[in-house]
Image (cartoon, rainbow, N blue to C red; front, top):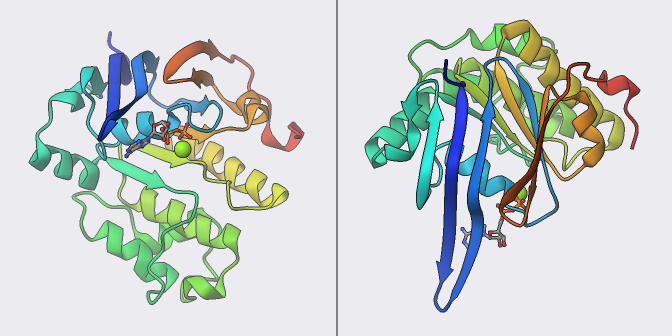
Length: 234
Ligand SMILES: Nc1ncnc2c1ncn2[C@@H]1O[C@H](COP(=O)(O)OP(=O)(O)O)[C@@H](O)[C@H]1O
Ligand SMILES: [Mg+2]
């Protein structure tokens, strides 16, 4: 029985003139369906590169990437576009909301391009924003804007939710509530969630932890008893 996500000997080299950077060097790992997985490592380790290859925003030079039985690493540009559009939910550090659309309209924008979207207002209620749907991003706090961006990603009903430093722009307590929301969503919706962070402390709340350093996986560990984020401090 295959894993939901697998990287097998995946490499990525960035070339800029004479300079080459091996951002991913024979990366291998697996993630199972419904897991809350944290990928941790220092700045420049290759975390974003890994997430972008898994999310179809970047291609690998070598190796095999599988998601739900599909060989992402073999996709052409057209297939990658479909894949990004229908199968992947992305959450970024700086929310990337459309400033002249309300919270509800931002979520609808994503759900409208999908095959089996979730209801936009129900999804906003799920992230705790039922009272703020008609607000514009500038009228919302950072944490609320990140909730909108999570709702936008979830409303696509994606196969996987990829979160690149989702608390990087938030204060300590707000960051914790966002991590809790991501974990609760993983549990209640059975969604596979991957969170990238440079913060080692966050690994305690994960089902699976993948350590990345200098473009390589240095450790992968399963955590049978994840710590609730409320009990983690850093
Ligand atoms: N598009 C790109 N072009 C050139 N170099 C890149 C590009 N993306 C990332 N890199 C380089 O690859 C390495 C890994 O970057 P990245 O995956 O962003 O690390 P992390 O997310 O762990 O901080 C870094 O040295 C970075 O400068
Ligand atoms: Mg990064």
